[in-house]
Amino acid sequence: MPPRILVTGAAGQIGSELVAALRKRYGGDTVVATDKAATRAQVSAGVLEQLDVMHLSSVERAMKSHRIDTVYHLAAILSATGEANPDLAWDVNMDGLKNILDAASRQGVRRIFWPSSIGVFGPDAPKALAPQDAALNPTTMYGVTKVAGELLCAYYSHKHGLDVRSVRFPGLISSEARPGGGTTDYAVEIFYSALQTGRYACFLSEGTVLPMMYMPDALRAAVTLMEADPSDVTLHTGYNVGAMSFSAGELAAEIRNHLPGFQVTFAPDSRQAIADSWPRSVDDSAARRDWGWREEFDLKAMTSDMLTRLAQRLGTGQKTFNTAGGPRRKR
Ligand SMILES: NC(=O)c1ccc[n+]([C@@H]2O[C@H](COP(=O)([O-])OP(=O)(O)OC[C@H]3O[C@@H](n4cnc5c(N)ncnc54)[C@H](O)[C@@H]3O)[C@@H](O)[C@H]2O)c1
Image (cartoon, rainbow, N blue to C red; front, side, top):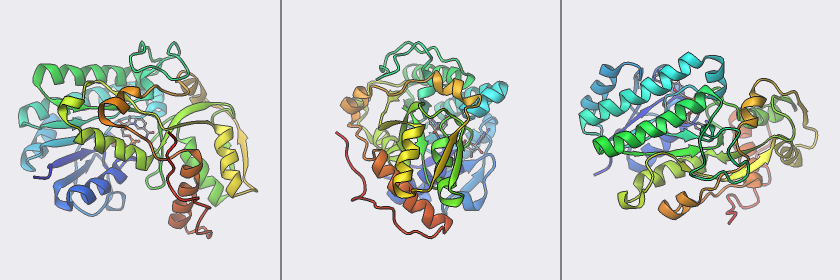
């Protein structure tokens, strides 16, 4: 029997691609896509409902009426928006998650995916290969909600027997929905600017290195973890998952390999402080050991695929960007 899946925040950067991937994998009518505010164009064909995760009774009604057994809870406020509006970030990220966990416990939902983030780490965590069990002392409200959220997920797992699974996503790069207010958004915006105007003003400094991941790898991480045998999932907080790390300058240079005239300037704004509080890379050996995590895209493979897909979507002319054989395994 295929799972009966509810996705919250389905119109966002992850949701818009995850819904399509889940429908392809399990069948179109197994996935109920929901968002507080979504237009048809943002979500692949199939059921799309308006659902505000702040309303517990609405969440519970949606789970009951669609006989949901699996939830991908993506509705959230991201790091930069959260720093600008910490009350909203606390309310949506904490109350929204607790509503999902409470409704799921009562409605017999079997399994929940909830993305945590590298935002759980604070300035005191090791910058290189931040360990799975590093002390978590974030300095952003977003990070505070992710640490508290991880603990809440672990609590519902052992107290209520809910099978909650989570990864600490790094910055995600994708060619479909635009990112929703995070500190790593530059790594998506830069591609649009490269293709549309040939110049980009980056809001992080040239040397800022952060962990990143291409969306196809992120979707695979989520689905692989959710399909893993329960006995293999030893953590119900958030697994570190790594894929690639690069500086803003290195990404600009890689794009310039394809578009030689591309001009980038660097003018750090308030998001620089958030980036400076995060590690450059994470140690994801627990995810590799427990459920076989393995990324496919490195900086080169991601850049050529991103340019090719985005150029097609934006209709900017050039058809391929030297894809060099597609995905490339690093290790
Ligand atoms: N995108 C990244 O780089 C990244 C990295 C690490 C973790 N994450 C996590 O992944 C999850 C999804 O991120 P994303 O990038 O798709 O975010 P996004 O901002 O692109 O999308 C979030 C969606 O949630 C919806 N939403 C907001 N408030 C809501 C509410 N009250 N009820 C229902 N829907 C609501 C928004 O309309 C939006 O469509 C979040 O938990 C985020 O913290 C994302």
